[in-house]
Length: 71
Image 1 (cartoon, rainbow, N blue to C red):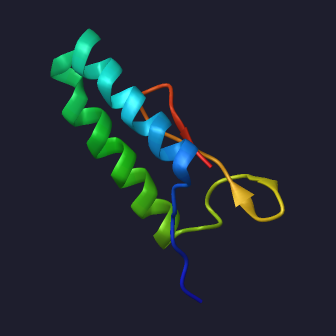
Image 2 (image 1 turned 45 degrees about the vertical axis):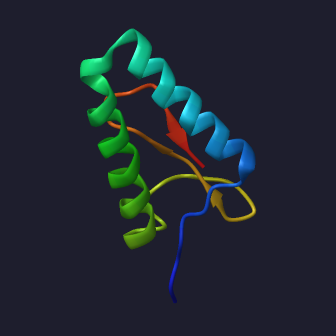
């Protein structure tokens, strides 16, 4: 079975807002935030059951350093 991570329109806006926040408030952290985001998304794709289930198959994964979650 193949799994994929997809972002709906709200999630995409949220990601871009978070990225803009780091661009403004901590520009030296922006690249690290983006890298962690995509690393976490790839981990979810490779190991979909590694994060807790919230509801009906939706799972949540925390970024290791940043206060951000993918679900």
